Image (cartoon, rainbow, N blue to C red; front, side, top):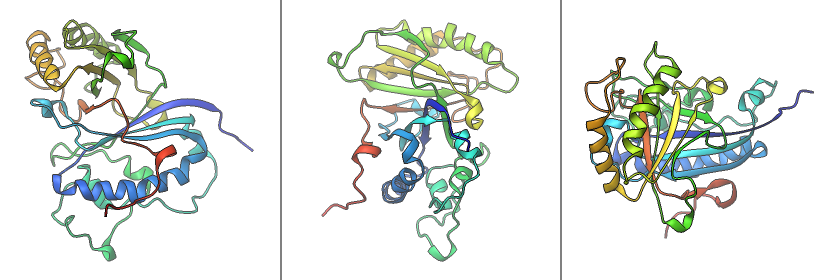
Length: 290
């Protein structure tokens, strides 16, 4: 019998929010249905499964494709592709209604998601839902599900920082270079123009990056970067300065900084240091407030 090999890898999922009215609906689905569904599927081969709540989008953050709900993180012990390749049958299908993709801004809002008609509900198979590409024309965003190494590959600033140095305002973002631009060409601009414009400023206290491992699930994005700042105002100040320094590459997609299409060329999230829900160790069910 084939067995999956040890393959430690980390995955990041960006969860957007189409409308503030949908926040409680999406939260209800995530905590009431999705966490137990997920753990029952991958519990034997995932060591960490956590939700990091998005901080409010800072002034000017919209043009960077900022998502507004959360970042989901997994630490896998086996390559998910290996698991899927075995002949197997799920005893229970994942509960992933179409409305979730509407709430997450991955599919167009047809005006019906305020009142779900259970008799007409459409359920997606989980992997199909996570493959949703979104549509620029319709104003929706892609479902971003990226795999990266467990450890950061490159360190640009701030090595040696500890928890005693204080809390961090984290900006994690991914970039997708335009069609026809090689990873090497895109990375040259990112590492020689974009990142130094930030890291040379005092406002930036940490900067790390890794290439996205595309062969696992065909993620369109090329690289993930994480920058830390003391606070939101420091990010705003640093970004205003960087916008005046960074040169537009010949392959730039937009006239203004950061020269990448929001949500499709660049997408990110603002986070604090800690996960709001460490699901593998701390989930105790959907217990409502009284």
